[in-house]
Image (cartoon, rainbow, N blue to C red):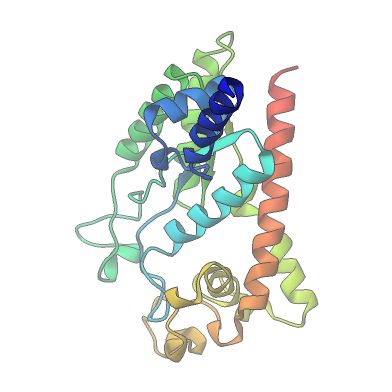
Length: 261
């Protein structure tokens, strides 16, 4: 009877641990125990708060990488996910350039962004994470992640901790090529808020897209749209997310394996 009681108590304790890979949804003791149990890989996702045309929310990058990081971490099996960095370089503030010309965009200096990345990685290494993965959902994020990863890897050659920057998460053309095989054009796929961008966010949560404002080129000059979101779809988005998650998880595994040779 005593053994049964102890078993039930232990079972209740296990059941109270949430089914989550997100660091900020754990208590510090749950995080400690997860690391001890072998979850020593952590994804550091960077997004951005920027204009995405009249039809997509300013937090597109943040919602997208939060969603994909969850799937990637679960696919890896031994990974957690740090909070999404939503403040990133978006261009000169005054006079405004790039996305800063549209209301709501938030930009920080690149050197500040790099310092935050560095401090984040140092914090995570201090707690026992041994493979720290930088993933960026926006273009301006990439150089800073690359530079910080290289700097810390040079500093920590024998520490047992490595930083892995995965540029293909953002730079892969696999989804673009698949879309073209479906009959879509490069012009419609676009480079910002077109078929690709819009479909991926639809695949995350259609409520984040204003479907009545999905117009080719945004519907007017200066809309911030380069592409044709009218041709975007949830089905396209789900396919793109599947490709992105599978490819990124594969690349992370390979990067970790290569770093341990």
